[in-house]
Length: 406
Image 1 (cartoon, rainbow, N blue to C red):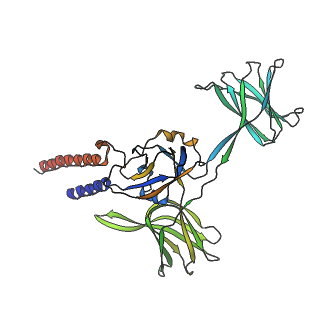
Image 2 (image 1 turned 90 degrees about the vertical axis):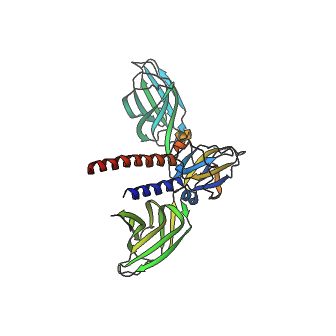
Image 3 (image 1 turned 90 degrees about the horizontal axis):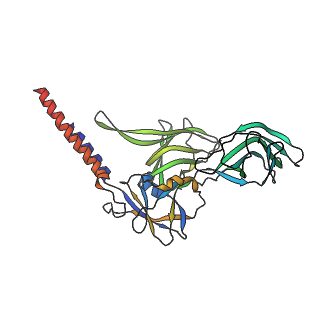
């Protein structure tokens, strides 16, 4: 048993030490600045669906920092400034801010940029279409906390009932404190950016088999290389149908000192003639999957086409047009830590697009393309330490067992 345990650990260490290396050239860099690169299914498969193994290198083999952006819809806040006039009525101790809504937009808040202060204020808001007759919106509301520690100004948002008045008036009570210095007034509006179309996986074969005894149809889908699948679409040429289906993957496990093969269910769903038959799939990274459809006493479905998709995944990086770059995959690398990830929200998808070309597997013995690490940071060192600890512990344990027998 002890020898078998050591053999298993040795095999695990060997599999960890042996790396998979790929390299591609980054092309279409026609200007200086940030570009986005779509990671193709081929690149994501080579990385074993783990972007920790991905690096961008310049001509001197130095790492170039990057961030990852997906192609899902995101919320963007757009700021629209408004013109306003400020009037201080010293007699009534009131400051009035009148904001013109020229385009009659439907508004429910304004954001004021105010010079830092520690005063408390009450305010009222009213609306008008002619600046003569005013209608109440908010009355005698208290606000404070107008102090930003590291800035000389602070942004304060005032909410009110949705309206489209041509003019909005804010009245601040100055009886207990001096007037505020209001520098700017504007409106933040949230917009959903358009989602980028999904990336289709096209390199696969389908083998169809009918099981009359179980009254099922099985479609065995074999990809050329393991793929990360996130959604599936069926094109079925039947008028009326409703069938239960599921996606299976082949797995192995060890039970009672023997290896057992079994099929694991990834997801179950219903194929229905009244829907688009488009399904999201939990995490799957496989070379082969099995789609099993229950027919009951019905004839098998006439499936014209099945499509598989990934959500688009982009790398955003700052390039120079005079420099040459390459993308590498090295499965011995760990997750990089770059400063640029702290500024992810500053980027959008409207960037010039570069591409990874001539992507292919390279000699695993050639380490010149990957950043060099100290020996004590490598997987080899880690496994040597683990094996050494096991040997030492086993030596003392065996000694204790001998003493107990005596």
